[in-house]
Length: 333
Image (tube, rainbow, N blue to C red):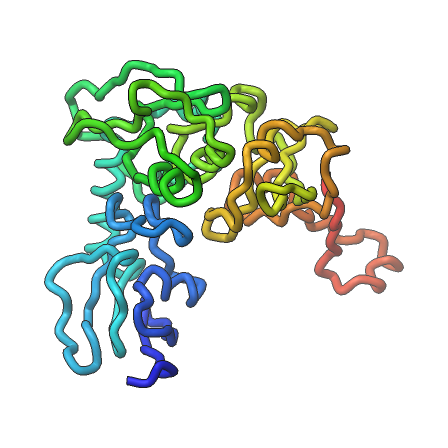
């Protein structure tokens, strides 16, 4: 088969052409719609995916050569496409019901402490719970708990919130010199921890905060300082010998409350940044400001950060100067 041959894939009635080897999730992202949620898959982390099962879809036709449906729901982040494959995601009641069950399973041990969690407002599990969660859990047993441990001066570990997506483990494995944390024990006793309670001090250790989809790993320097929707994200950069130096500054008034890596539309980091940029340069003078981040409208972070439609003019002579549809005010509040 020629390297230039593309596979045609249909997802919820929309067709897209992708290269061989592309997974269903990647194809949906290229399509730009009907994209399954993903809690463990991360584009830049090799080996990620296939653990949370939130991205499950129904393959109603395997390929043009073999149009039989796959017998079970499959993880879209791990299933490569075939030419002529037909996939049902949002249009399948079976997928919606199964995803609701997966969400309920993820929330079995995850405490609903959103009111005090620093991740609230940008938590993928919180979004998943609103979109696919049940009104109440059927789990009547005691939730698992863990002893609190200190893993260093910058990262706060809340193991009770962890969903074992392994993202932080892959991040430490692939972008740091030596990983000192991982998944210990097995089954219901599995937990993210450091070996012999070592501190995580690597120059890029702060990236585990950005890749964590829940509030299990949070920034100690930002801890309880503000709700994320009260801050204003701004793109900035600096000359850094360790990383690209391209970050997002989160302002409240004139103060930089935290620094994070820049994320794409799927909530994944564009570049991993060093701890110096993340934790030690929180003054505006340290940075070259590029502009305000265009926050996706569905996010709670967009509160008071979008252009607002002005009222229609009521004076007749002024109304003729307008289209009658109002005008846009592009200034941020």
